[in-house]
Image (tube, rainbow, N blue to C red; front, side, top):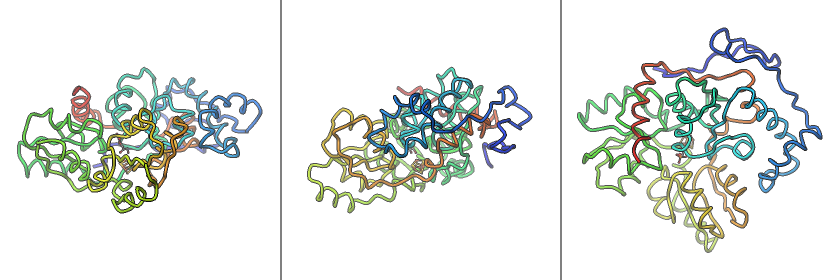
Length: 362
Ligand code: 13P
Ligand code: SF4
């Protein structure tokens, strides 16, 4: 069963009217902004270019700047916020996002924000989590095909089968899952709170879905026995200990820091492992001379913009799903109010229990 659906989009991008007949009508149609590179655009976006000039060459800025200006103006008109994950590209992360963070930080903000509209700079499960936590808000995903190999690896029926196989064993779901899966489990977790969540249940065995590598990495930090599912992140599973050892030998003094979606043998050769927010914090506070972020490519760009003097060695892997989100698609989202995340209210209420239970664990 598909838990959510992006609404059909009607109308040509050249006609800045929302052709949807129902809920979107509460949002006034807006004209498609002028996207020319003019002296006025250059002047009004100069302070934003300052933030990214170390990573975006001057020749590229005239392509981004008109979108940046238009998106920032339209956000005010729509009372919208853009919640962007740490893997979003630098022009999104630094120039149009209102909040940036890891999955847990974005979920907390989605719950607290007073905006009418959330535009998710991230993948579909993140937009679903925002909708689950803020059902009264309009949540938009600029490209509904922005999926995730972890979320795609398990269905609600898979979780029901696990519960039949292991009766009474609580199920912890990584937030990288669909609303349908969240509705079936006892509690959610993210990479930043997984150990705490597993131990909060007060049992000796839990089922943890869907990431087998995150489960293996967490199992090494707790006495709780973990039964894992077989999913993996297509970005992090590709790193190998051999390639990282080769960087250690070639780059004396380098610090390697990995996301816990990497295989345990990769984490073993690294100096630190943590959520994307914890990785950023590590670089900002410790200021290593040379660092390799064993994760998605845009993270290094985004941290580099804020940490001059740190040299980033970059054998990163791209997440094709995260990269579906672009400035032109974000602008389209705000002009046409698409693509709206819709979740069946009864299913969303069940999913919300698992997410809120996670948020309540301090
Ligand atoms: P965190 O940002 O929560 O560490 O998760 C990473 C991730 O899987 C995003 O795709
Ligand atoms: Fe999913 Fe991995 Fe991409 Fe994150 S980086 S969205 S876990 S495929």
